[in-house]
Amino acid sequence: MTDTDKKKIAILGSTGSIGLNALDVASSMAGLVDVIALTANRNIEVLASQIERFKPRMVAVGDRKAAREITARAESHGTEVFWGEDGLIRAARLEDADLILNAVVGGVGIAPTLAAVRAGKTVAIANKECLVAAGEIITREAANSGSRLIPVDSEHSAVYQCLNGEKASSVRKIVLTASGGPLLDMSAPEIEQVTAAEALKHPNWNMGRKVTIDSATLMNKGFEVIEAHWLFGVDADSIEVVVERKSLVHALVEFVDGNVAALLSEPDMRLPIQYAITYPDRMETRVKGLDFEAMGGISFERPDYERFPCLRLAFDAIRSGGTVPAVLSAADEVAVEAFLAGSICFGDIYRILNEVVAGHGRQEADSLEAVMEADAWARRKAADLAGEAARRG
Image (tube, rainbow, N blue to C red; front, side):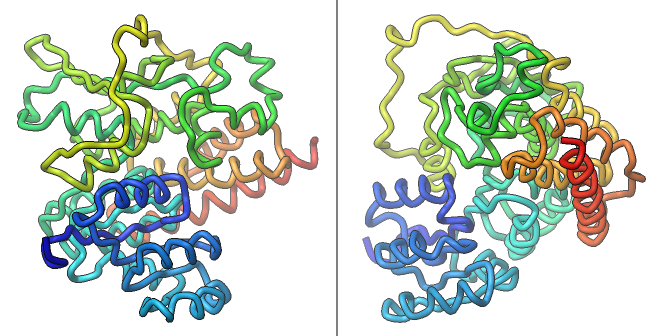
């Protein structure tokens, strides 16, 4: 195989959990994949080791200071260094990139996703915020440019695989599964005062801190409901969430004839990442297969919307539409950051989100400017509320 035969990929957010797993997958596919671009924020040491190993054509970092730090270590490998949003966008629309994997965390992932889509790229999406906040714009632009969106979240990847070859009109319901997170069996008063250390102890998945806290509140699952709406063209009433504690069943699709398709696998993010990279083909993986005898029974239960009200907020947001999901996403970033910093208690996360959404004057989310204005407003409002909660103690 020559270099021109390799699939060329750019990984945005290469030093985070998804990015690290993606590079592990790329390593297992030596000779088949060429990593031509990497981006990170300020994790210079990890990025430097990735440059040493994969020798990408370009890297982008968060700011000018980080760019200065990485330049000396990148130039010896012929790697160009860029920084800021411009650097992210440059990586997202590299002309000969076959796949853009967006694993950036937060609203900063919106602009590069939109740039890649407008360039007609195949985009593997692990950044929730881009579809939650700007799903209307991104899916519209993808339809116009012919860009393909391949989900990397385990649940959406499962739905994507279950729907392969099926008509949209044949789908009755999409069912997203949730492990329930580390707080599933706690009472409401216990959940209210849970510590960051407790909330970060996810029973099945090894994820970044922000996503793990969102899993504890079930906000992560709520965001996945909004993503599913845009990815698969179904309304909120055709999406259901169930708890499956072992994280072995990642999603189910019920068809109009009563048949149900499900995708099962070990809870390992390398599987949906590899599927996105190799699509439409499949290949061997390092991940072990399921041991059906050892895994025992699988059961499903309904989530408790009273103890985990963030999930209800997400369903309400997609029904409201417009800029409401963008506001919810931005406020959640601020509230979770405040909780992880020890400024607010766990229960304050929901109260802040609820108040921010209630105070938002909904606008149409038909332009990036409208989305970003709503995002900025929500961040300011959530920061004010987090400050008030911190002063109350």
